View 1 (spheres, one colour):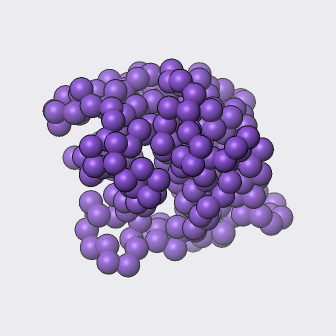
View 2 (cartoon, helix red, strand yellow):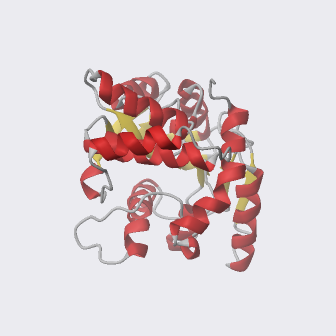
View 3 (cartoon, helix red, strand yellow):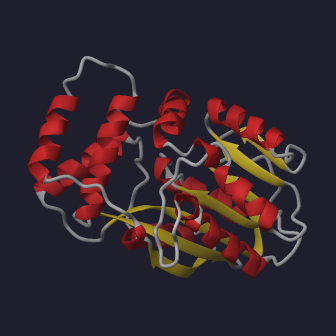
Length: 283
């Protein structure tokens, strides 16, 4: 079944609470991946390593009074880390397709006393309710991968940014090489299970951004910082066979199979986890 914006919304509406429950780190409200870079010692630090990279990029383009938006904000974890660390930031926007996630993010913002500083809304990141050129930085963590048409995302991000502003992406990208039949099978399970039709190569992403006035400034592979949980192939294949035949119809099942497939893909170097940073230029 083709992935649509509605199916991605349903995927997160039904799976967000299980994700938070099973992850074991609900306190951080973070459903993104942990990165164990040099010097990282705790799970909380690992979960926020990508947020620290984003924070650095925002500060480099707007040392104070930064105007930012998190497009595909989930339950708000990145904004809750980044926003308080900025110097006198303007009110920020967090946008998510999922009303369940938007509600959870608003609850957390109120608990943290940030409800008047961070506005969370349900909406599509290809149509953001902000004027053009109004932001210093736009970022998305594991979100553009869900885009049915990534070109529309880059068009909108470019519209939102002022000249010299930054677009910061942390996401999965296909390796730029041919895949064996077996590798392609694992990739397909990942793409289908996680509803991520927008997983393309980094080169394709750079080209799409460039066509919309966004010039690449940084391309860093983060895969080495992941603690992979890939299985022996025979075992993973057996679990996939059984999982696809379970009588349980909850969408968490294909998501779990997609998670397993992603681990196999990362191990096989079919998928890469990367930080891409772009600067808005005249367009």
